[in-house]
Image 1: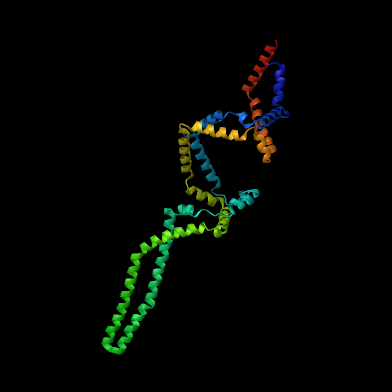
Image 2: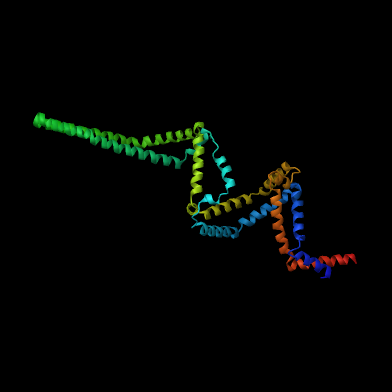
Length: 338
């Protein structure tokens, strides 16, 4: 490598030299100022997306990496006693509460289809059965306390008034009360199942109507905020325990299988290309930089991306392959000049 090439390489590798940072910023600014549709063709973007997804779902590399990350995070958060609230930025709290606190009234027919599910019916059935069972128990106690006592008093009075005849009449009164009690209980026993079935259907409809009633929308808005507070005030350890019950490893397998099925579709690339082309067409001559400017993030994005790109360039120029490429570039330049 000649002296000029060596001097230039030393300057590129000098930590105090800003040449690479300037090159990185030029690259970032030029890219953000270029219309989106001029940066890459939709067909190329679709093909790259397909290649990335295929690489991720083929074999066990991605799945094992995700499993290791889950295990690592499980160990990390399994003993964390701080609450979720301590990890939520204050800037996000108010917008989240505004979103959840907005009154919303769903369609009654939609709510019936949502609520009328085996799990909900089972829950309502248990509640109603328990209520009826408790009512029967109280009724039985009431019968024993009043009707049963009435029969016994009748028997006692009959004995005193009519002797042996009175004893028989009193016994008949007591037996009659017991028969009535048994018949009432038997009648209820036979109708409980039928009652619960009909009551559950009515309860599902009532619940759907209640949720779909505009007068109750504020209550459900407050309920959503209350649920949010419960989650925010729960410790990370508690939430991690609940998450473990959902077996996230199984969820990973489901997602991988779904992505594999999607990518294997014959028209995946074509459909993806059409969607990307539509997005780019709607963007027109719009640039990524213009969008960043609109949302007030252009300066931050440019600075952070420039910093990241500069770090990569610093690492690249320090390698032997770059040095050989650099020397060859100067050799070819010198030969061309001669």
